[in-house]
Length: 273
Image (cartoon, rainbow, N blue to C red; front, side):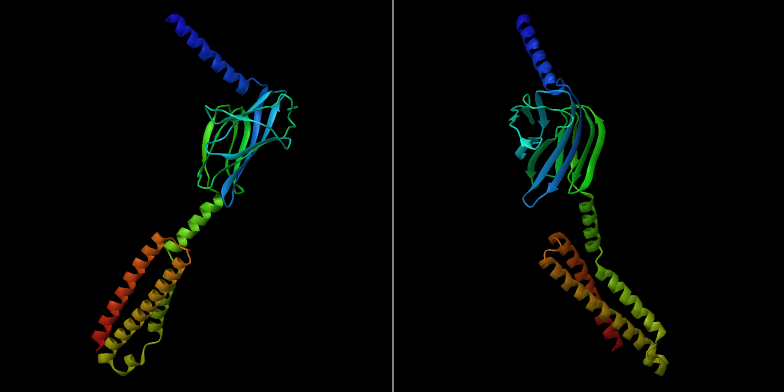
């Protein structure tokens, strides 16, 4: 029993040592990564440009996240053959016949599914500098990372964040809302600056009539503007410029405001009569 256990431990030790030799025992000292991620019409393309500080090596190993397709490894712009590990996401290529040096240009290209929202990386070599850009915006940078270091970065550019914020601002507080407030303020101001003729002709009834007239004018204007807002929202929704959820929320809000304005307008008209 002890002999079998010893054999197993020796085998495991040799596997670990062998793996370490593949990853770090190839005279590869440090690596510089420049990773460019770009959104295309059908997928997301990844281009990893790598610089090795090495004197000589026989095997290069790269880690690529799950579901990558169209993997291509280029050395000095020439495609090289590689093997994907059946255990993990590593890709290895034999470069014993190539002159690998600090001037060697290494590039790893592959595509990810369009729905991918996170980029994953596990470093196979000590890395002095790494930079990741997504649609020309830098989303990650770091330095002095050891081999085996893993990280995940959300695929969201600063442009996307700004666009989402602007869209949210525009549709949560529509410009028509401000237009309604401005018009109402102007109408109220004009009612004080230019009193109606009815106010001058009859003190006993003019106040009530003028008040009703002013309230009626304001409510009629408010009603008209709200109806325009509802029409505009409908057009925006048909043009796919706002989501169904945003459309339903805005429609419900301004529909209630319009109904309330109409109710108040009917009350004012009945009191004036």
